[in-house]
Length: 259
Image (cartoon, rainbow, N blue to C red):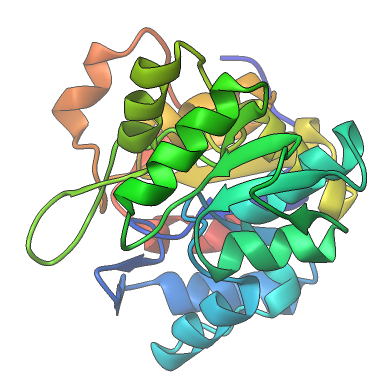
């Protein structure tokens, strides 16, 4: 395997790596503390666009994981940054919650259902048939279609929930228009995170629990990748993919000494 440069910056997924259904994964607190003590740049990433970085900071803090607000990067923030770069000061019709609407407001976007430049689909707890119908009609009338992330399902204590990717498929079926997905595995999200840190991919690593999003995004962004087995991917499933992480470990606890 190619020799890698020392890791100077870290990106890590949140669910399945640092926590699972609201409970911290053993070793996550030690890993975050080691990162903070080392002074190395790092970001905690999530494809979930429901919450603001401040919301997630509080949720993590309540379970003993002290992650500063500025060290949290969501698909909503990546989407807002992408739109600000591509079409600054635009307008959008949004299906989503505070994490997405707040990020767009802070990027200078105006939210409207009258001839918007974009229809932006994010995660939400309650998808409204009326809102989906409006989104479909606006896209048919020329609005461009953006989605925060391609995840088809999300976890809950009761089982799988339909997520952004599934709802995007419904809109695509009705309009014939595919969305542009900003979140993982699009390496754009990784690049925007690295740019936020002022980091370089050659000396950065991505930690995740999914081969099809975390590892793929890190790989395509040119980073080292670590797969932990505390989330959605088990060891037997790795062989199904035509690519490999740099290293597979049981949990985040096995990476503390690498910081």
